[in-house]
Length: 447
Image (cartoon, rainbow, N blue to C red; front, side, top):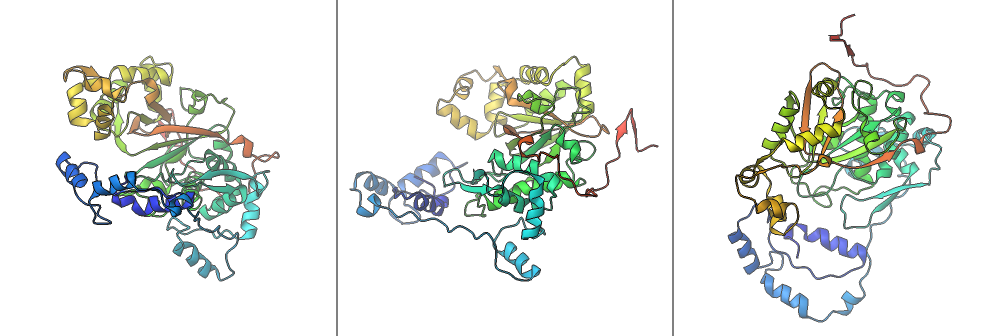
């Protein structure tokens, strides 16, 4: 049984897999609907066939399997050609836009010469398979090569020096556009020497559109998701609202130089001298905050969230303040926050926590089922482990502020395997935007 909103999706999925499962479709939506309305769904008709829903279910379970169901035909989309037909630049650009191969913003057309130049950013063969991706987990994933990633890098406006980082993101095989009726945002964080080699912004305004590398790398991830993941609004991408973060995916480098804590990739088992991309998924940037660890604990105990994880993106001044409070590591901070962000169980279930957690409790999923049995005045921690909290250090020390997100860390991927043996391939005159004015010792922009 699948809600009627996804009828076309599951039918395409079945054909692509060579299967003929029997589906019944109750009305949509189901989230947030009362039990009475859901009962009406079950006792009513399938909105697509106008037949009683439960009669269809019983029939599907009891009727003999047909010959067509025993021997289905696999239906797949044809592979796109490597090259499009010749034409003027304007005609080809229009073709890219009208076929949904872009994010709606201007692109650099990936001509053979431009892609060949981009491929000088790595020693790997153009036909080497980098990974497989699809924004919908049920359908067959599409394979992509180094050359295809290079074409995307050209479209995003990147240069060969950026290609190793873009290839590392591609190798993680996670789309920046996860398909769900909810609206996901994504974040990609870069650690290690590569940040400085390609002049990523890790300081002032690192999350704003003032740095060439941050911008094109983050955008390349979205263009890969559209083209390799086959993202199509309303067809494979089901987010009701969508998310403005999908344009650049909060791409930045962690400010290792000004941080008093170990870099994020070292926390995940990499060496400090390795270059790594780390990927996060979530829904919300919840607030801007200021203050000590006590305030951070207070924020996550009062803000609602659709999941147990929290990622704090903090200015280096915040990290130094936390160190002055006595915390020697990020994990010590996270452990303290978990222990000091407790709220009454009644408030957790009735006031702030999402219906998703309530449903998990009803299904007996731990730890939600155990939490639901507690008295309403019992104090509980919305986050259950220090591993549910991440801290990333970025910013230019102009204000000791942090932002709270409900992002969860998903995975990391190595950049160095994609480097050319002769070193990062730079242009004779590397393309750079104006560098952010740095702050030091409390003085900012004063000669």
